[in-house]
Length: 204
Image: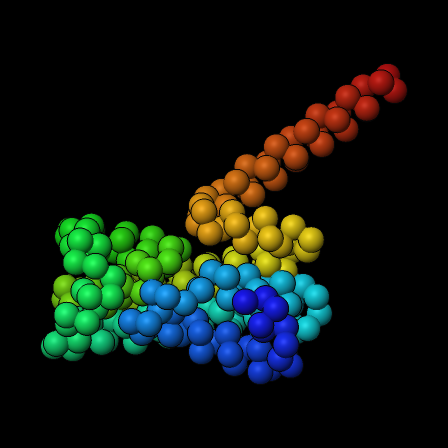
């Protein structure tokens, strides 16, 4: 996805990425589209100076949130969740997600934003379940913003480690990658503080 987007001028790359991210979270074809990879690619391009980081982060967040909102309203519409969805993603997978949402719609909606496939399915199932739109939005918007901004910044800061970051996000998901980054940052900070303290004691 990185090489593909890099072949377009900045504004056009943003528009293409927005279309992919909207489709990935809002249309049934989204189960086959690279959501996280698209955001990381946008971030990497921003890190190379091809477009502003803030524009990439805003585009990623807004597009995926808008897609989820579209999926929710499609799910709330009678007949929107039809056999075509089951045929594409599998009946067992749909049943597992519906079971996860039973009594736990809010946390399931929030967590689903960070993982492929369920990010496409959960908004539709939330709409179908009768979940109030305000509750869905309260879960979807902040987590969608965190997902879009977080992955954009990861892509922008990855530099030569982009491939490894892309692989880690694909395997672990953004929450675990973010947690790992926080842990490593705290370890670095404590080691630096201890090192500075030891240096200071040598002068006494």
